[in-house]
Image 1: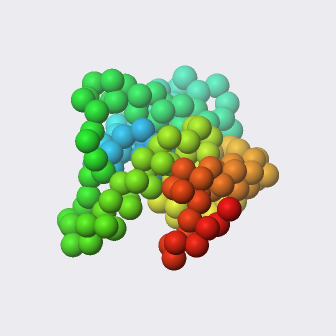
Image 2: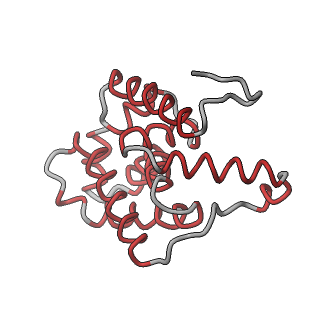
Length: 174
């Protein structure tokens, strides 16, 4: 990955594209912790544009994942300050056919995830929404694999508690 960053610094379009493909799901997942899906989609592009323009400011290529996610968090917080609070989860056209209860459950789950501490919120969104595995999350965020496992475990426990501690069949999971 540091070689890709160095190549992107030298202006390689292929390296920039490879960095985008590798880190876009991570940036998108982090952004979802702060803003609605449509905003996260747009902001993902903005974050990469900003990062690539400022790549010369990055001291160590190996620090790229954490540096990029810092840019993403700052962009999300700035976007939240500029916009009025959203009243609900934006749904894609395919989701419009979902049952009303399913939409309410999705809104409740997203609200519960957004209420968690940042470390848990981000790792859960990367796992549950972006579909990344624990090792993929570690590799793309710069977190230690053990930290990712702990964050996912504790985050899921907090999420279960926030959602009433019940599974999909209504059985108590505590």
